[in-house]
Amino acid sequence: MRSKKLLWLAPLFAMAACGNGRRNTEDYADKSVTVRADSTEAAAGNTPPAGNATAAPPLNSPERKIKRTADFHCKVQNVFNSTTRLEQLVKAKGGAVLESQIQNSNSETKTSYYKPDSLKQTQTYTTTALLTLKVPAQYLDTVINAIPGLTSLIDSRTLRQSDITYQYLANELKNSADETNATSAMRLAKKSKDALEVQRYNADRQDEHITRKIENLQIMDDVTYATVTVAFSQPEQVFVQTIVNPGYVTRVPFTMRSEAALREGTDMISEIFVGLVSIWPLLLLTVAGWIIYRKMRQRKLALNIRQA
Image (cartoon, rainbow, N blue to C red):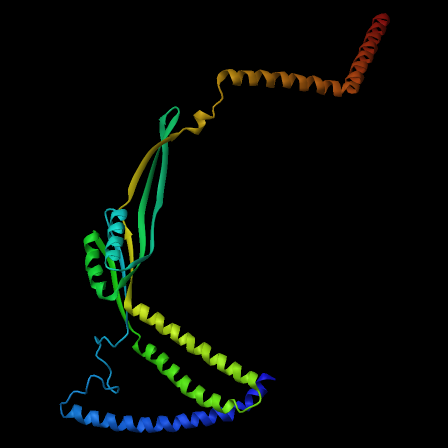
């Protein structure tokens, strides 16, 4: 239903687009003349003016939006000292520490006998650190040049520059075009009776406009502050400590073990007696059978003696 309601807006937007198309055609014609003139000047050895919109700014021009990043993987003698010094340097240059993480990774642990009541534990570990830093772009080279002085060996170094000038310019031009198109389209759309569709169209355009503005603010932040990621690691270390012998601490004294053994023996005899009592009918039948068997045997012997 909503799509059907939007159909009547299509001619209005088409009319606005046609008007902009005519203006863009005229602008394009004017720019084409300018480009040809500039080409003629360049062929004659003349340099275009710095403010000419038809010429791209130089690579190192302040007008360009350059995003800079740096990534280091280094070995140091002491992770904590190198991390602290780098953080202090970044803060002194007006930067910020977004993340600073130090941790120990255990590689092997051995436990050996030391004394009856204690053990010796030997643990090998490697300390690493990961830092994410924001540095003002003008001080990026200062920080990069200071990192080798904090390290013993640089395993890898990666520097990147991303030109996001045209992304920023595209958002600016889209916002300007939206304002022009929206003004023409809304002037025509307000003549309609469906005010709800007009409000929805206006809200969608405002959301897109705000999104592009936020993107440009993020671009300016990335251009103003470079991002530096540094990973530190130090040689494997050994940590030795004396710990309690659990077997010795939990060992039961001799007297207590003797008492426990005596109780266990008494309990075993009691269990045997209780077991015999529980089978007294069987024992009674066994005794009765034995008595009958003895009497029958004695009678048989007496009979054999008489016959002899």
